[in-house]
Length: 284
Length: 282
Image 1: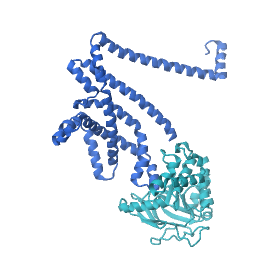
Image 2: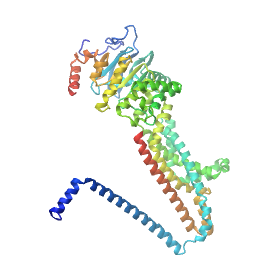
Image 3: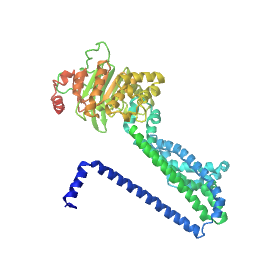
Image 4: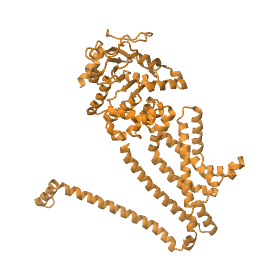
């Protein structure tokens, strides 16, 4: 069964038996080479596909690069607004979610009913309908709403919506804190409010931090919907320039690219955060 | 102790077998009284009238098979379980079982008063993982009892030293071994300066080689005169540290007495069978 006669077999045996370190090093090197090759192929494939597509459009004269260089700056100026809207909305949504989750876990039937209604209503209607309703329909009830800047109404609509989804996330996070933690806090004589603030919520937040990261990434994309109510963010600017010049291919392509880049960057942050938390879980 | 089956008479609330430990002056009144505690889980009658009086400085060991109700009784003592019938008196604070009005504000406040006086050490430690050891210890004294922070820290450090873990003051619980965690949990209970310590199988979740360090701390506390009720399977500890041992079976105290009597010459055949099995296993 030996391939090259007894001499070669003896050499192989010698290698295995007397130099296991060489084998281990060879395996590690092979794995590194494989990983490197895999990564290079990955990047090259992306560049070929994306570059090829864009190159094809430019070469075919479908993209007016002079137009883009003239208006690109204006469109990119909306990135700040987009990020601002997303950050504000997620922050406010977290407040809605904490209150909603406490209601969903409450033994008070009214609080439970109110928070369940909130979740059901918001999750049962389209986000764009909610945004338009708050911006267009509410002033009909009270004209004062017309005075509120669109960006504030947009943030409110987005956070109201996300708050409902995150209510369920927070509820699950709170329930994932082991029962023994509540018992220990009770046994120490902590009233329920202190228990929730000091013991349960801090642990729940740790559990759901990755989920909040995902919500933020979704929020970056969904914030584009407030362009419908004339908040001058990325998509709104792209549409305004594109439609008035009949150049929506360029402007939408640019907007899409920016959204994509933002989510990629945020995903990388998210991965890092999760790794860091996994590490500190060994500590905690 | 007359052996056979002992079921307390319905209205006789003082335990005829409750005798103060040898070191306790006979004049001292009981610091803990569990009066005719009954507990149903649904229709399952877990405790059938348990009465126990514990005098200051005594160590009581509560032994019995799993499912006999020993942990439930201990958890009724600080109302982690609401008893169905009965009353708990700790350090003069009396709370009657009131399962129908368990949510009323006054009842809850009374329960809190009981809990401040009776601190529990859990089988699973239940340290707060997001807080350093020192913060675990001072959290309740500061937030619940309103002790000034630096004073709480001083008390906490004293008890941390007592359990031999001063050097772990600023560690997070996850960095500690099981035995160290349980010693921190004991220090956390002590920092509340309770009238009685309740131990719910404090060594059952530990690897065998870590049991000793926890028992040493508990024995020291017992000898220093802490009042303790300990649910345990550690007969060696019961022999060394207990003033009295209660054997509980199907929610009834079958046998009560000093450890040499209950453990070494049990009167009731059920106690004898339980102990034979437990001690043989070792």
